[in-house]
Length: 568
Image (cartoon, rainbow, N blue to C red; front, side):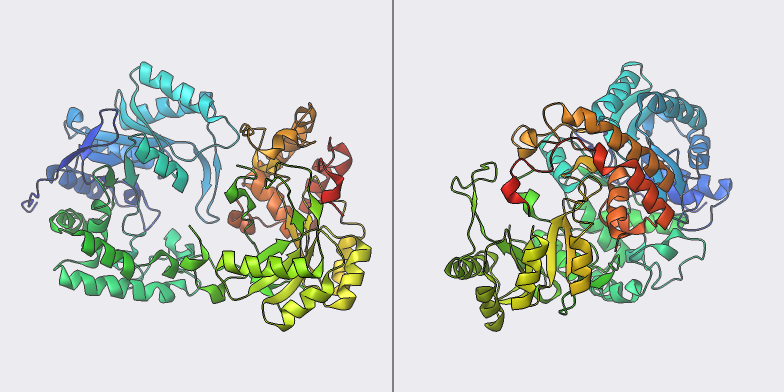
């Protein structure tokens, strides 16, 4: 083997619990396939050995890679290395991963945690695991139960440190505050910044063939990002891959990337990224060259909302919860012409808070205009795509004028009766009707839904997860003390416990469809006409009926709202 050029890889503290690792780690997953064909043991062992000889001591694997064969390969490599100088990370929690469908099941139950740890120790041929991750969070098991079993494994000496994988942005911010280290996997963007699919072909058996950023024409649309980085790399006298890695390395001392590769030359190149020194201006220049909003990923289906010409994404996003009803101005960071913005007027809260149930409806023409002008100013836009009357009062004439003035493009109603819908539609075409519609709120199906389809009015279901119930609110996670759900009829006075069997039935059906209960609830709504992940859940007519039968409306305990004036 050729002589290894040593770059003196720095040592860093990963978090504040005492774990020390090399600043650059090595992700072993690719040695067992996934991105390409698995390499044989000889080649895999050679790459791991070369990484260690170069100063990398932090190696990452998982029981699901292979599956299981990756841990066995890493275990063979460890027999050739001084165990006390290696920081070994592996994971548990992903069950039944299907590469072709890109679906998986998650299990965080205590007994499963222990069984996985024992099996990993045996496959790896070690007495302890340095860093044991929960690969994905099981939303059906309280995190305290999973962590409790992990804590026992630490106390028994089988695990030294505990980690989590795939955390939300909020969790990442809190992780920094709590002194938790960040391990970035796929720091080369699944190989994109090393030229995957651009300077070299994608292997036919690679999961990248179906990855949203590499398929459906998106790879070609993403190519300019690579070219921009390529130009910057010339300035820094390195490769695009090295510059991409250097950018991650410069995100902080608590950030440790774990790029993987099957080729020794790529390994050496990755290690060479440690020589690339970046200033704050350089980091900003790279960020500006590869802006997150320019990355083309999943192509969301577009649909016509109503018959007036409004086109929107098949899945929308309700922003209410971001301001605390359940728990930096965004439009300035987005291309306005690509956003369909909906807002509302008509509900007056004397106390200024949503928790105050003493509100009234105002639909007077002068109030409608004043609200529109104020919303335009707060939103910082010239026009509103879809303007709803939040609750109904005779107001359509003034809304029609706002459309004629270009301040509003389309008009919508929210929580309207069939009679109001007909009368409003006669004054000016209604584009969309926003109504509460979920598995446990289906009273609009008999009359309002057929009427909307007759008149060509699009339907926008709000609270499609039943105020979060089918996302586990109050079932697998506690209800926050300051939320209005504390007094909601279906979540209070013993009703939540009576409604719990509905969630359990959905949970069982979700296992069948290899998705979460929330994704299945959303897929049910979608098929009547995680969130984005729900778009991948395909249901037959029989499936839709089975879900409907599992959550029968007459079994739901509690009114859908505490205040009848908030409904039609």
